[in-house]
Length: 155
Image 1 (cartoon, one colour):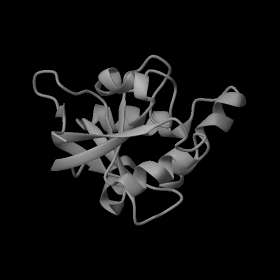
Image 2 (tube, rainbow, N blue to C red):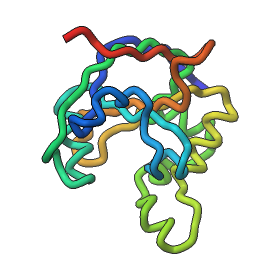
Image 3 (cartoon, helix red, strand yellow):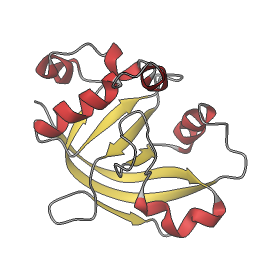
């Protein structure tokens, strides 16, 4: 499984009252997370945040918080070699996870996360479904020994 390191500034939209806890990640079900499975969803650019938030009701009452991330063992879902190693179709990641849940099924993207974690991945790069030039970072664990480090950027 090809895995890569990365370092940079990434962004997350949160309600202003959640600014202090923005680093705790999401605890609701998401494309790559089961309910109560802590996952940190970030975007590589502020444009990426806006694109991601369009699927979640837009940016109303949200602020964009920058973070500095240093991580390794990240699977890049834009890389066909990752999909070959997973023996999976990239459409699994873009299928509607909500529709799968509504039908009583496990979303294929949750199974992709499971397979990535079993292969040693600590997160993934997810291409934007609405704007292919944009991408997001999904961390499975952070700020624990041996995991990605994430901190609020100095602004």
